[in-house]
Amino acid sequence: MRVLIVEDDPMIGKALHTALADEAMTPDWVRNANDAEHALATHNYALVLLDIGLPGRSGFDLLRNLRSRGEEVPAVIISARDDLDGRVDGLDLGADDYLVKPFEMRELLARMRAVMRRRHGGRAVSDLKNGEITLDLNSHRMTYRDVSHVLPAKEFALVRTLMERPGAVFSRAQLEEQLYGWGEEVESNAIDVLIHYIRRKFGKDIILNMRGVGWMIDKAAR
Image (cartoon, rainbow, N blue to C red):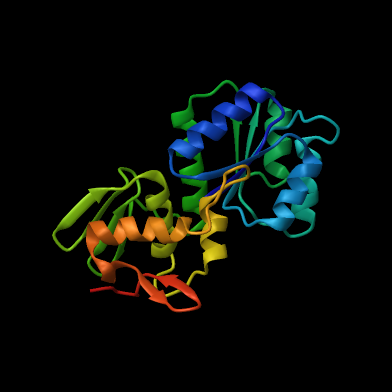
């Protein structure tokens, strides 16, 4: 899951980036509204964490522009501004939630999950299932037939991407887009290596290769 952090405070931005990466998300971090708009125009994000007090244009202005253009990417405001008017303004402009700084990372992650649930019909999803494959989204444990392993972050992110759309073929570029953020060096065979490790744990039939196109997890895999 790729997340855009819009935060000008270097300490908070770095802490958020580290915490989200530890949760097997792919975070990108920008420090102003203009860079955020460029990032949103060139990448697909599952969610935006948005500070209000940005240099130059405010987070409110960014959110207003996004919603006026019909951009529906979920947005959680994270702000030191805790007055009622600020919270009401943020929610009225189209924010999905508003969290006042300082906050505990556990609460932010819970609010992010709640936003994603609401955007997907209110279903509380703790795992993904497809045939004999189960991926626990909390523990990062994958089970296939009688084999079970807790996956490292990148392997988990790759399997989650494939499991969220079983039967869909993902190209190398699409998988790299989901798994690697800015500044991460991506070797030309990085995806192949991750798939090799996953197949070594669960067998070659766990991820199928469509030669010249990409990879997939077969729908209702058996």
